[in-house]
Image (cartoon, rainbow, N blue to C red):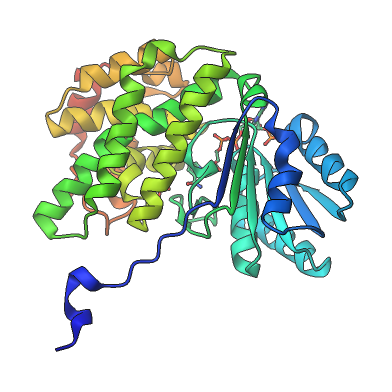
Length: 357
Ligand SMILES: NC(=O)C1=CN([C@@H]2O[C@H](COP(=O)(O)OP(=O)(O)OC[C@H]3O[C@@H](n4cnc5c(N)ncnc54)[C@H](OP(=O)(O)O)[C@@H]3O)[C@@H](O)[C@H]2O)C=CC1
Ligand SMILES: O=C(CO)COP(=O)(O)O
Ligand SMILES: [Zn+2]
């Protein structure tokens, strides 16, 4: 008998970060983490325009002081062009590893470039705005697709709570929206498993749901400029990232609410932040699931994350357009949106959940 035909013995390969360091001032530990991973020379730092001054230069100087040869590149967009630019510089300089120091854009560009040239990557986020700071996913715009693609997980994550607490609070609240969105992502995954027998991981789903529940229950402890709040959100983002690594896909943390956010990125002239859109999407998708959407809305309100189109700075008409478009974003991923919402159904869900007035 060919035992590999038995689903229970199929090979699974889960890629997780090896070192995760969270705390006050841990930016100074980047060099120690590199030493722990035996990454002792020839680094390339990818950072952003503002985050260079906040963290990029610190990491650069600290690695140089420890005797490493370090180059730095400032990246302004999470585009394929930028990934190619970083990859070329990394190859030309024969770098041993890459670091993404900054926001989601810098981390994704470094993560994908490192994956392509098969070198280790270290994530040093300056904001806790979404779970991409930890995960094995990279979201790079290539003109058509908006959803993330599989990449190598960071070898290490170094999250300095002092730096993240000083980032604009909006970014932290956005991270909370991304975590809370796990609620509907898991419901969608369960639905797809029941209706289409798609592979489902109880462990990944349980970790993802539990992470969102803990955050919802602790919503009143999330406050601006508080390192304890940052610690809680970063730990939740780590858990979400781990859930995705266990699943081998973004399923545990991305369902219909993420499809709504990706659709909004396509139609809205100026989209809001990823986690803000996912949070609002979760309210509406929870309504469609027949679940407790008011609890989601209340938690987001307590955190001071947007719960309406107006609070996201997006006109109502784009919310409705995105709702109708959402199911086309990733047709292979079955969710509560199924074959899509009609324009009148979209208007009902958006009005009933008070996303539009
Ligand atoms: N990989 C994944 O799974 C996921 C990836 N994404 C992607 O991530 C990106 C969004 O990331 P997000 O972090 O929300 O937003 P951005 O990467 O757009 O960053 C938002 C802004 O905040 C600034 N910033 C970051 N940290 C600080 C700080 N400490 N102080 C002051 N300013 C700061 C950034 O500066 P600077 O200009 O220096 O960068 C940037 O201007 C998108 O490209 C999205 O597609 C989203 C979700 C999941
Ligand atoms: O944002 C993510 C999880 O929070 C990744 O999801 P996507 O695969 O939809 O980009
Ligand atoms: Zn997300």
